Structures are given as C-alpha cells and as structure tokens.
Image 1 (cartoon, rainbow, N blue to C red):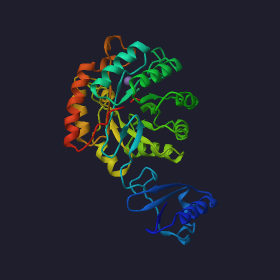
Image 2 (cartoon, helix red, strand yellow):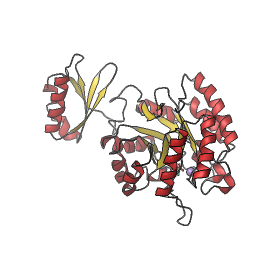
Image 3 (cartoon, helix red, strand yellow):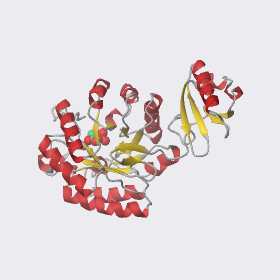
Image 4 (spheres, rainbow, N blue to C red):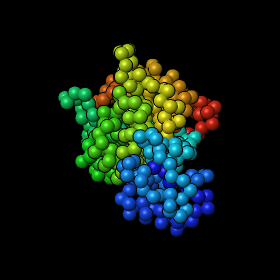
Length: 342
Ligand code: PEP
Ligand code: MN
C-alpha cells in the first residue's frame, strides 16, 4: 500500500502518519521524490485495506500496489535510484559501475597485480571471491577471512571500492568488516534467510539473478532485502540456463529494459558468467551498455591458465582495457558517465 502525501504536507504530519502506521502494526519506508513524497506501508494487504489510512491529516490518497514487489516498484519510487559506492563511484541514474577482478582471491601479490591493471584500464570497483560457491565440493572453495583481508588491503591501496560474495547468513557479520559491497550469487538468489540478513547491513548489495529466475522472482528477492531495511540493492543479469551448450549460460539482455520499466533499482550485466567465453565478452559488454545497463561486471586475470576458479572465461588485462575504451564511447552515446574511483 502507498500513502501519497498532499503537496503541502508538513514534516510533523509525516511523522504523525508514520507513528499511526507503526501503531497499527505495519512497517513503513519513506520515498521523497522530485514531485511527491510517498510512504510505503508494508504488511499484509488484507489487513491494510481495512485500515483507515485516508483519514490521517496530510494524506491525499492511499493506493494499493498491485505488483507483488512494493518497495522495489516504480510506483513506490518513480525516479531511478542512485547509490553512492564510496570513493566517488556511483551507480544508477546515468552512472555506470565497472566491476573487474579475478573470480577468486588467490593471494595478495596476484590480486594487486590484477587490481592495478583493471584500475588503470578504468574499472571503478574491484571484485574477488573469498567464499566461492563451487559446483564440486572438491574444487577450491576460497581463502575465507584471509582472502577478505587481502581484498580490503588491495582495495585501500588502489583506492577502489570492493565487492565480494557472501554465501551464508553466518558469514554476513565477518564479511561486513571488510567489504564495501556485498554480492549475493546466482545460487543464493532465493536464500531468503541470507537476503534478510544482508537487509540489515549498511553496505549496498549486488544481487545476481538465479539461473532460472524470472524478472519477478529477481524483484521479489530484492524486496526481501529492501523490506529488511537496506534500500541499496543493485540487480545483476548473469545469464540464464539454456539448451545451447556452446555458451555457459544465455545472456538475457531484454531483462535490462524490462526490469527498468518495473523498478527504480539499478541493473548491471555480467557477460563473463553469462557467456563463459572471452571471445564473446566484448560484444556482450557493448550490447549491455546499449541496452541501458547501469554497469558491467567482468572477470579479469593476468594468467587465466593458473586461475583457481573460472580461468577459461577471464579476460587478460589488455583485452579488458580495450573493452573499457569502447564502453566509454558507448556510454557517451547513451548519455551516461563512468565515474573514476578517487
Ligand atoms: C561469481 O561472481 O564469481 C559467481 C560465482 O557468479 P554467479 O553467482 O553469477 O555464478
Ligand atoms: Mn566467477
């Protein structure tokens, strides 16, 4: 349910509205738009319908949001959300985040070498997994806390915000000590306990689409994080399962404009996990920008054959630099900017 405030509402009326909503046993979120201020009321729709919300002073209208996702919807917030990621980097509303780095953190020296290269190429967020969701229990599972410490040190040295994956609600507190952005991987998109847990942290969350999740499933997962109190969710298309085994997954570019029509949240693309093929990543990166993506996530390694995870899909630093160069040109055509980390 959305409470639309009168254009001339007062702050004390807004406070009163929020108190009343709370007294009735509902949670709320305020959205201050350019034209109107809205209060999103969260709770069981049936109970809400009978609540006398219209009678509260300052209220102009009370509307039901028909879509199952509420806080994520364009109805709740008409303008694109813009999130500050630290070090001058923003995403959304015309700002592109360029995430790059190895699949896994493998050691300090190698991460610094790759980090320096991607930073010089123009990446504005450094990635690296310390907890890796591997299909086989016998594959490298990540360096754990030692890896998180390395990522933090390298991010600080290179003056770049960092993103890393969290796989378990019990890891959230630990990861929060080291990262600027949390990543929820495709395999955990519907781990609802984990979503609720990252809903309580102060950092933004990069939420990757599950391999067979619909746009509505993705937005409902975002809703879990928003409803738990974290307003900063960045969506990520990373390819869905298909019958064609010539690519790792199928990059669903249409979800980008599709999601943009439904939500104010930024959405980026990950052509690395979507294609699994370095020869296809450049073209799919350009296509993602042209489709309106708010950023591109690419795995880069200085020696892919020695990589402990996802080596075959990694771009070499010079290949990445070439891709960023063209993405800058495309960004200009699309009226977007690529902030530089400072
Ligand atoms: C990753 O980013 O390395 C990763 C495991 O991604 P996904 O969850 O999209 O497979
Ligand atoms: Mn990977």
